[in-house]
Image 1 (cartoon, each protein chain N blue to C red):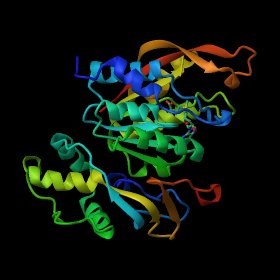
Image 2 (cartoon, protein in one colour):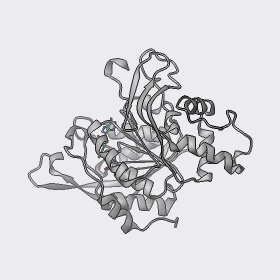
Image 3 (tube, helix red, strand yellow):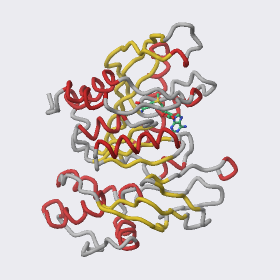
Length: 124
Length: 214
Ligand SMILES: C[S@@+](CC[C@H](N)C(=O)[O-])C[C@H]1O[C@@H](n2cnc3c(N)ncnc32)[C@H](O)[C@@H]1O
């Protein structure tokens, strides 16, 4: 699971959950895999992302490195910044672990890099 | 015409993808045949430029043929969504074998709302070969289309039975997208899906493009 994906997952439709975001990450196994860098794509991706949540997620799995916690101005023109964002959004990959609902503590397992977000009928 | 890899190369790649091992009839698990999948993806990229550098979702990604095809055509990121653990095992293996690192997979039920909450309008393009809703799951095809329209900020490409064309077009308009049929295809369904004596049956399927009304 990439951090771009984590940035969009919620547990909101569970019974009794009001926000369900962000899900906590308990990583067991994290790797990085090289993805082609496309600066134009990353520039368009950044506005879709909750930047704070991204930074916290990156930090919690030990890959924040020197990514600025505040989104800088004119990032479209800053290749260095875009490369750092690219790495955190697309290259960090959580292979095994769990996502945890911040309100109920419900755990969603991650196996082979695939988070299992299925809910039982009595949970929705 | 937008730049694209050769159609023949795309089809060769998709031919190598491993299929469902024990297809589940209730989930309507049959892979999009490689010649159809490659033609669909090739059209989406060459005619509309909707894959290269885009964030793409594949709803009901199964063993991953559309997901992997989109990655091969240089999608910025492709996220595949699928309910079934067995299909995902095959999908994981296919993605790993092909070494596409721009792919991410999520296991979820597309009919549940959980799914769309955080993804609203985040995708440029949604591609899918949804269940047709012929196996005691009437309406699931429209469920998929509704979710696809919620996820996409631009376009959706999908397959639906030709016999439901007018209904599909009306449903799309009512949910915020305009549809057009790009091609009518003969879809060769394995006979298991039709309770038929013949080994396979051709059904007529429309290849749709929907554009989100902004
Ligand atoms: C016709 S197959 C297409 C598979 C693959 N996309 C392809 O093109 O080869 C439909 C897929 O949707 C999945 N599916 C069915 N119902 C689903 C649901 N409610 N949520 C998510 N996936 C579902 C099935 O398991 C199956 O893999």
